[in-house]
Length: 458
Length: 149
Image (tube, rainbow over all chains, first blue to last red; front, side, top):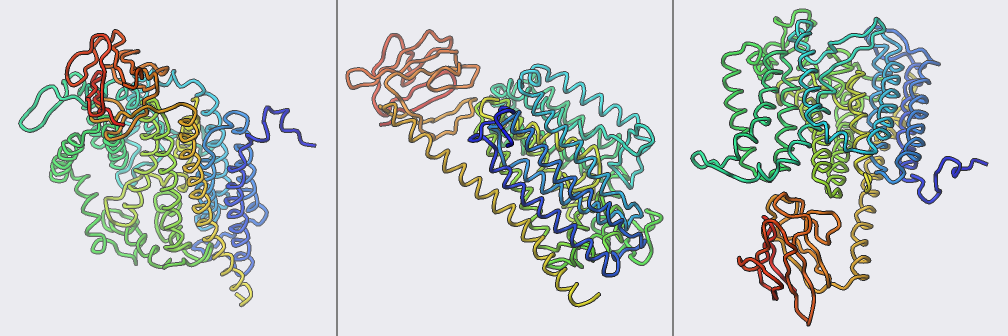
């Protein structure tokens, strides 16, 4: 008989809730796999390239992910038995959606193994997640080296800047550092987010008294001593450098939003938000008028239907700028309320249908109902994050949880708003769902940190 | 595509969306259970130790306390920055062991524990023990409380 006690697991403290919650993503994977196989056998996927899905290979991503999630579940039972039990199932469900979308879209893009690649990334992510939980048993080293984390972040931005020439302005957010020829690439900006959260949390938790206190005033504005404002202004500068230097509008918005939410929670003073948003507004106005890149980004949004010609594929972006946005909206619209059904749509008429526009692919095949559920899952992730933050006593940990949760919230809002033609489109990946290795790894490291921080004695 | 396949796919399609909503529902249930447990726990804790009064936070200063929240006063309540205190105030203006509240002779008494920034009752620095009544304002570092029954 299987004896749990041998692994140091007490039956009463077993993570039953997590195990039961993991049944649902497993069911989702199996039913989605079944759907794809039925669609295949009854005439093939409706695809633009007509590369059929290899039958046996389709089993690997679905069952591989179930095994990986169970593995992570058992590992957490040993390392962190009393940690939050809902976070892994939520992340697991979201990454099941991601793997299924990659598996389904792969043949359309002429890459039948796309699902397997995504599975490898998810497994690596889960390993990183469990590793993070194991390594952060003592969180002091994160806090004590906060300036080191800031330096690591600045070095990462430097690397990205140095590789900026490999960016094309129409496809921001592509992987920039390529290791080897195996197609595995790494994007430093993903790790940058985590470094910045740790730095902000360490810095703000030590200086919150100073920031909450007003020492002198300019007009009706009360400001803390300049010495304490310095690092904060430097971070705003970093966001500006990212925007101007590497044309990563999404990353700049993400860092700025992250900074604002953590500053507000730490200082409890709305005046910072007002001032920062005013500065942001002025900066945006100046950028719009003087920087062609910024102007084109914003102009695409409200002239999409004039510039986007759905009849001609976007070979030249300058002639057919709104193509991607218009096609994305068309895909959302085709989905309707309940979607066309998995495998029955044609999501890949939208460029980047597996990464930037994975939401429109999902929306086409699962419809409004599916998108609403997807949003609900992200909301629950954010809610659990806030729950962990409220239950923590330590300011540093509270701020860190707030920041890590804000990363998910901001990413989701920025990319979905971009897809739905509400704000300029950016290259921020939809957490867990979009295809891509570095974003998945970073998101799973964040999940690992959240799981560790949810422990009462962490 | 035959009709049978179509019906089968329709069922699978509905099942997929239903599962996504079930995940949400389940997590909401778990969260609600967590909250109920958390709501029950303080009740059990306070039954063990008698509460002789409350402190209402007026000004949370630089701590994470929420203004308006009520903190329990036990027969001996220590206030300070160290986690060993009965009421922990995470602020640099508060000393590790700042203030002590005692319940003696059917009244509450405030004592300063040799803090750096001092303890104030109704804006007057505390030396020795000062008797307080509901309505008195207690200032510890940059945090202000009002005594309540």
